[in-house]
Image 1 (cartoon, each protein chain N blue to C red):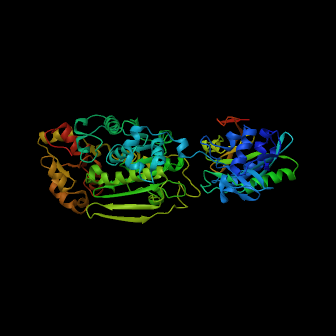
Image 2: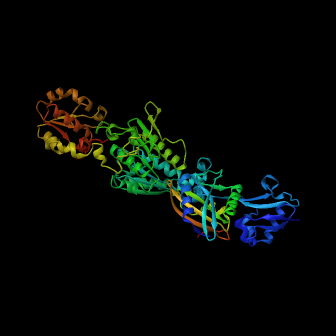
Image 3: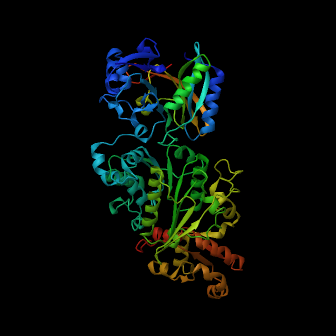
Length: 130
Length: 483
């Protein structure tokens, strides 16, 4: 479940560009071996959307529902790093769930750039790029 | 009593891919304990090292978040369904992740900063990671660099090409009496690292030019303009706009100073305030016009304050405001500034897209005016001395101000300040009685204008004394004091 369909990738970049300078976020829905949909979710952080995102439990359930509806699986989540590289931060690590794909897209001065996929190590010691 | 527990997608690999399992317990806490003892891999993802449920793990009993019930002590009834529902959070690195940590020495050194909520550890680390370039290690650059170093700005660049002169010490507090004759950068480096050895000082012993400005500026976050002339000031401004770097601006003259912050995103630049430089020579330099020594102390310190505030992300900076300070009247005033959409550098349709020739822009290029002057327009101090000694002494006109005349003078010279020359041409012509007229000032700038004027008004034998009275003292009369 690591391959990101071109359409899903394009949607992530669009969302990230539109949300800049704030962070955007959403769910990744997979079908078979590839992620076929990037599903926008609201950023409900109260810690400042310039540097944080949060998908609350209700929206998480919405994402699971969306995956069921499409007869696929919830593969993971994406978010943007405005003016920072597409590399997980310490905060990303502390909050990470296992067995999910985390797609991070870097946005530089409003223009989406690097996009990378990550997965939490089983011992929570860090992320590995997929 | 067994309860149904719904497992979210990321945790299903630990429950044999089941989306629901059974677990026992009278309370939520007991239930989770039995769940994690049965499926051991769940534990580290649900609980942090100190045994608390992780903040992004939400546990529901039926439809209720246990945070609004009795948390892990929430009692379970027959038929209750427990769900584990993730929150997903994260985000880009914040200052504490991208900036260097403070050593214990630094914590002690900056303790008065650290207890200010507006600075704090986060802000102090930002200062430590910060890079500021001081253009000039003179009157403004001295207090600014000293306070930046004291405040813990990690890297301070200093650009200057001068040596320390005795007349600098009245205001340029980076340098001391034993430094006279040494390079300003040497004494600046010693003084700054003695004050705070944690600071990295990067020095550039060169004049700032259109060729090197972008290369030097690009390594810094903020540029602090401590220049003393218009050509360099426009150069600093334009380079800051082109690179998108804030310009902590200050300038001083006699008793008056001004400060602002230019070239921030959406904010005005120096050219929005002054689209054109003044005609060359209209505004004398500090060397010609004088400056109260403590004045740059006030303005340079304001520039350092604004620089530090920019690094801390403060809101109340001088962006869009020009602060005017009158030391003699002891008054501060403020003018509102707006970005000019027509500004040739920072406007909507900029016409200046690269650095230009600023000497030419400010009309101080030696090319046009000087080239047009006849060969006998100037004379030298040695020729003047020979003429005096031979008895065929010329009429020596000193166009400085009376207070300058009190400090030193060429014997036999007549004082008529530049501002009065135009109205006293006849008097000069009569007094010269056909002799050649040699005009001088401190360094040759004002007297060139007076010479030009006298020639235009019919005194064709007027000559400018090259290098002014300073050259006279250097080469002819070293006993007199220089200023």
